[in-house]
Length: 541
Ligand code: TEU
Image (cartoon, rainbow, N blue to C red; front, side, top):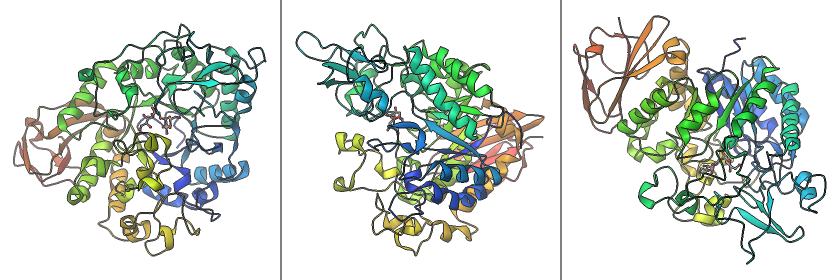
């Protein structure tokens, strides 16, 4: 299609390049591997891919620490490999969104190497530097998401520098216009190369308050422990001064103006702020001069609970009605959702129900590689951990390795066909092998084929892609709403529990099958009996 607003209601498949497909046999996935396996993604029926970072990096945070914004890390290949991947994706009808990690760079980036040399060099103010307190302690109480102070002492420059994440991820100073120009230039480089848009890492972290005021401390009872590990002291502060600053919007408008020079490109921002999520969502995505979409953390943590979902939908509709949400249940930062939300014996039914729900809510959708196979979270021994966040907070928080293990392509091949190396960079769990793509591809009842059918169903229903959403009255454990657009009205009912339920509503009367996969028997008048994790999706006369 050539629709310039293709992103509205699109389904985006996230590739974690280290773990998708290894073509050169070094145990780490690469661009040539992705190119080889793009058919699998096209065969799902998604609209686009989002590629986690493939840029030059020392890989302290596995690519979310960029040392050169305009080149590909050798572990992933070359710019020519990138171009080949892009060309094949486009030939298959897939748009390509790349990750832009501009809030911070790697400490190996030449910009930082220069900045740390002195207080007077031409890049001295490209990062956030501050003097110590008289007793030598850091300038204030700001904390790193990954543990410890957000300030690290630099012995050469004799100052502290700010990092919201690892000490090897110094925070770029967006108050400096030259920094804004430099990162916009790097984005233009990729637009010129033909990418279809950007996933913007940590958009609400670009700016800090130059007053360096201390963040207030949050009372434990006000802290939303379900959204973030309670073991992490970061979550006990209200982040008023280190992020989510008002200057952000002005810069997002500059990004949009740049992207708008290239027709049909789109942006999706990551807003990570459990306290001000919806306000920022509304601010960053309402109107035509800022981001196209932002993805919501509402369903990346919390409980799989009808009240939680109904509340999140209602709040989003009320507080960010003009915004556009990107929905996701899994990504490279959280426990895979079938493990997070379901008991092992429920996962087949749960995986299907949760996909139908994801595809029926209002917004665009991000799927994470492997979820189409129903992969559970991998259990990784402490000795095998690679994620610095997990190593820091083990065992209360086990980190992100468990959702980053390699894709499984062939059940009977070593390492599931991911690599010919003796050891992949993270282990391939034995229990994943039976779920490999080749096993599921020809089984009409597999999770993989359910994903294909459900995605095909969504494609043919404008009410699901762009329609309004209206919540219906519901008993506990059941979520129900209608979606409406272009004269089409669908009623969608989900039993979110592992036990039978019933649902009675006038909206059901006269509803007719509309071919949704896995949908269950028609109601008896206004009364619907739902199987455990059962769904009913129908058109209303
Ligand atoms: O994540 C932003 C972020 O806030 C993370 O702390 C997230 O909440 C956490 O990983 C959840 O477990 C982005 C990227 O998605 C992540 O992979 C990077 O490590 C991080 O930025 C730093 O670039």
